[in-house]
Image 1 (cartoon, rainbow, N blue to C red):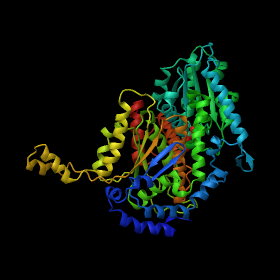
Image 2: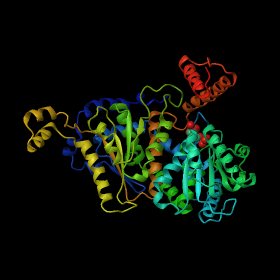
Image 3: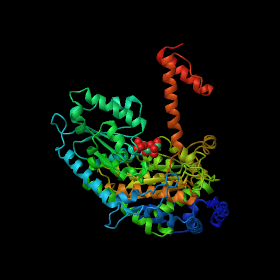
Image 4: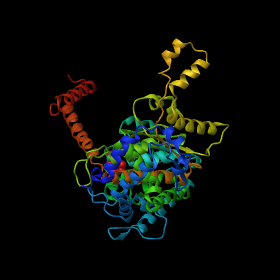
Length: 554
Ligand code: F6P
């Protein structure tokens, strides 16, 4: 079973946690002037300060021992080698091949996959150039002005997040839209903003069976054909990104206009494949290459840096430390960068769909908590919303603060203020404010003693809240590529430690199956004017109430 809990390293950490828990972060800094120098790492243009964590040299060496016991470097090697690291689906997980920069082959099942990857990249590049340069025109000869990506999950969150993150590098006139939700409001409101003559739809679905995507794509096609366009014009306005050629053809998209990828690319790891087409349209083939190069630089680091200097592995070990030994159940992502506003949502799928698992690779149950809840919003907005709970609430919430030294939009003192806020938050979360200093400042402000007594506990901050700070020069395509790959590998290293499979997602299937059954039951009841009685009483009651409200049945 190879559960981490069976290792001596786990026992060593358990006893160590009890000793470490009560040491204040501020005291750790007082005791060691070299702490910042000691607990920092560099990789692919990113700098990580992890000194504001509840760790000592001893903690780190015990965590490293756990990573060794769980064979994290060997598991990384297996993934990069193309081994079947996703056994429940019998697949490799080779998203790293999509950004592989060297002329060396990458084998899956004895076959070099690089020629196919390069061929798709070349087709994507010439397609994107022709759209960006106005050579690919719509059915009335006008250049394309709007791109609508229709996809969901990994076929939406990655391209949406990345096109937002790299907006300063975007084509000057192409507008990008993303439709994911089966809620008709999403497609309807998007179609209101575009013109059939100048809109290009990308139907993005790995399987091409996802009901939300197909429903939205059909609505888009009907809308398009209701304009003056006819069936032959679909080819100029609809392209597909998928692994499923037969389904693409069945939908009515010419497979000449399809960009393929492979089953060894997981949905949530697919931004580097043709699923990244909206990103390439947005930042151009050159920008996309830079993005891939950033990811490849982080791959190189993940494969070659020893555990102690391996940024994704250290971040993973910190998550394991907090989740399994210090009682944390969530992890905050706080990008101090407005362009990264969809990054926490993207990471939710990456981390929670990957590591939301409760059995080991061999199917035996895990006895400890696995992937924490990931959440967040960009700073400084979060400060005026949920940061109160971080500072004075009762939960331990480790957080990653992400910051660029340079702004893509230098303007007055905005960026200096942004930086000051980011650093002030991590400092305040660590230092807190003692009751003594609260009393002192209230006295200095002339507050009377009775009021001081009433207020002092409310204004005390315990501090001692751990944070990481990730710093980069500027958020450009290379930096974003490296950042995404960093988190991908962090998630992988966590899974390696917990010995779970981060590449399947069986938990999503049940809801999909039940929705299909429920849809059929609802329609049958409406058609036949009957009540649904085949589910539990709550679900039956809700279906019948909604049917009555929608169709005025009794
Ligand atoms: O809902 C689960 C999921 O399978 C994700 O893993 C995936 O990214 C998403 O659905 C979309 O799937 P597809 O790209 O096949 O439409």
